[in-house]
Every structure is written in structure tokens, then in C-alpha cells.
Length: 67
Ligand SMILES: [Cu+2]
Image 1 (cartoon, rainbow, N blue to C red):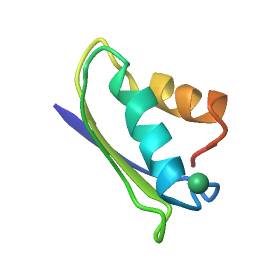
Image 2: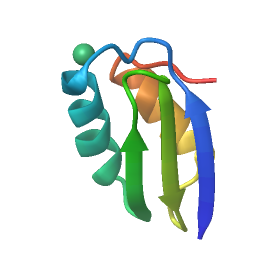
Image 3: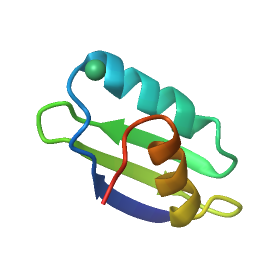
């Protein structure tokens, strides 16, 4: 299991948090998603077939580009 911590400044409220959790949880291999509207931090636990690149791409696709 790999944990990645990303910052996505577009996270502004609990709705954003819910969207991110729902969308990332749909990726195969994603085990846990935490997102915080105050710190703008997204933490994801994942394993194959999920990849960090896939998670970052999904965040960008749904409007929360991460670094
Ligand atoms: Cu929001």
C-alpha cells in the first residue's frame, strides 16, 4: 500500500471534499481518501492497479488540479 499526499488549492468546502472522495474511491486500487477543505490536502492510500499519476489526472479532470 502506498500513501500519497497532495495539495489541491481548489478545495474550498465540504462539497469539494465529498466530490473528491467519491471520484477517487471509484478508481480500482484506491483504499482510502481523505481531503481537508482547510489545509487543501488530499491523502490517498492506494495499491495496484491505481497509480499516483492516475490519481493526479483524475483530480485535474474533476476540477481539483493537485501538486
Ligand atoms: Cu466546494
